[in-house]
Amino acid sequence: MATEAGDSLIAIVAAATPLHLVSALQPLDCAIRLFDRVQAALGALGDQPVDVILIDDDDCADPGATRLIAALRAQGEHARTPIVLIAAGDAGAVRRAAVGAGASDVMGQPLDPLDLRTRLHTLIELSTVRRFAERQAQLVALSVERAMVESAAREREIIRRLMLAAQFRDDQAGDHLTRVAGCAIAIAEGLGLSKDEANDIALASTMHDIGKISIPDTILRKPGALSAEERQEMQEHALRGYHMLNDSPSHLLQLASDIALTHHERWDGNGYPQGLKGTEIPLSGRIIAVADVFDALISERVYKTAWPPEKARAYLEDNVGSHFDPDCVAAFLSRWSDIVLLVREHRPKTKAA
Image (tube, rainbow, N blue to C red; front, side, top):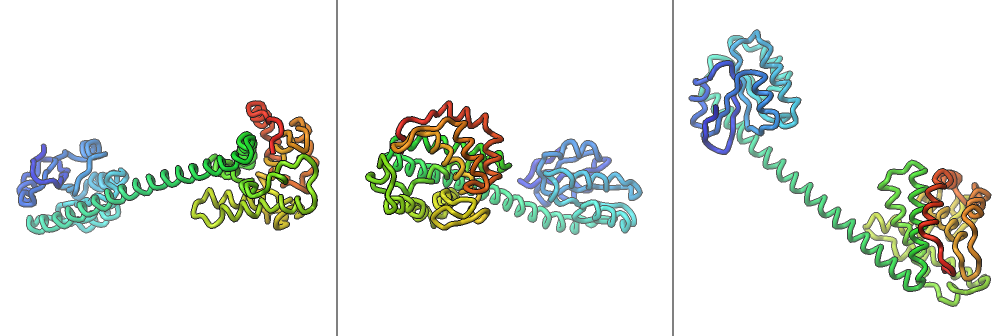
């Protein structure tokens, strides 16, 4: 049974039709739904939003009302719905049990209709304000989520365009970056990083050589060994790439700047540009050091022929603890079948700079 009235809704749980309650609540101009005790109320109110639940317990010795309150509180929809218990006779013990179970208020008999309306009016207003606040919070959460998705899309667009800039200098760069990113995912997952962390490192790794756009072609494409001065100029790409990417609020670009700066550092401290050692090197830089060297070895360059993957793998193993983080190499080797498949699907082309 329900009486159609205002937008607010009061649910009354009672053993018999409580005409005295319906009559007392009419001035509130609220819709009223009636339920006969526990099971009917639990089944119908499970996902039914109401402003107030009013339980008319005409037998203080009956613990059913207390159980009903506890059961309603356990339902997500009514974890915060105001629940008022009307208890017959001496309500002292019932009050303590009901409040302990989660009742918002307990009223005794004889019932004062004005007092009941006043209390319920206040609780209805509180419910209205709470639901409005919850809706606003949901809207804010959706807006934040949408903004985060849009921000992530913009970050990926920036990185994609920076990759295109690198490819203008070297049309083989895209394949190299694809293989390095694939190796990075394999290593990161082998280390136990989450899928999101692995994907972030892989995407950021595509910027590891962005600083090379500042290196003259006479050095970048030189077919023979570099002079000491030329090698020094070449090594500047790590620091220049860092400066291109650093100070961005973007998490991915910050990660990319760390990789650009540290992927030529060595585990033994003999790398560049800072001479970092061991775990002083960010994990992302240690991961890309393995991935980048492996792909450089299996690729043909203007100054070298390509190595077979097995020979490049042996080089990594031989340089564990000197050039490379032992854990990163172990993770790489643990995913060797994936690496072989990656190389087969994205075969290195000739003369990649």
